[in-house]
Amino acid sequence: MNDVTPAPKRRYAKRLPVEKRREHLLDAALRVLVRDGYDRVTIEAIAREADVTRPVVYAAYDGLEPLLHALLDRTQRRALASALQLMPARTFEGDVDDWVLTAAGGLIDAVQHEPDVWRPVLGLTQNAPAIVRDRIDSTRELIRGYVADALQVGLERRGGPDVDVDVLAHLVMITAEHFGRLVLDQPERYDKERLVGALEGLLSATLPQP
Image 1 (cartoon, rainbow, N blue to C red):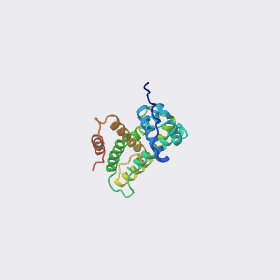
Image 2 (image 1 turned 90 degrees about the vertical axis):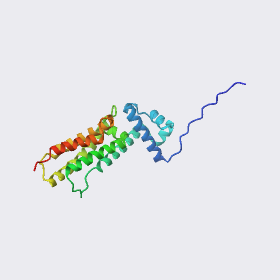
Image 3 (image 1 turned 120 degrees about the vertical axis):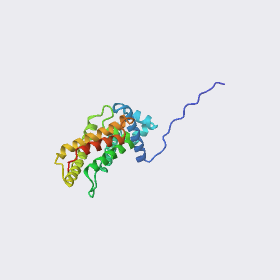
């Protein structure tokens, strides 16, 4: 009798409600993007990463473009929500330097908690297309406006120094973003305590003298 190798069983994806399936696919797409860069994000790569067939992907999204738009929207929402949580409350009465230090530490925590979300936002993924860069720039500008407002209120409440808060907000954003890149790319060298401690020393050195 001839030995017959049985044909491999066809792979079937576990049935999920459509919204859960979409989240599952977006998670897979994000992993591919972070690991391999934007150029390697394809329907086939996403299906393989999600352990489903291509028809399952197409049943959730009409194609690669709407899937990537949905991923971009979700990433922007998550990053913006994390950033806005760091803005001072209207009732905040502490010193503006204390808020800057708390916000810097909070951003580092957010980046370390969801590194795959923040890598594209911080420009750490390869070959980002123009639409992604434009969306990131618009989100940064929105957050920078909130930062400038918080600095303005805080410095006025403290009584100075009299500085250009618009430029200062740029400096705060650049510093915060670079801190995020450092803890992702060189975590063994730059941890939260070191970065926030260095920032605290810098702020102390610039306090107005009595």
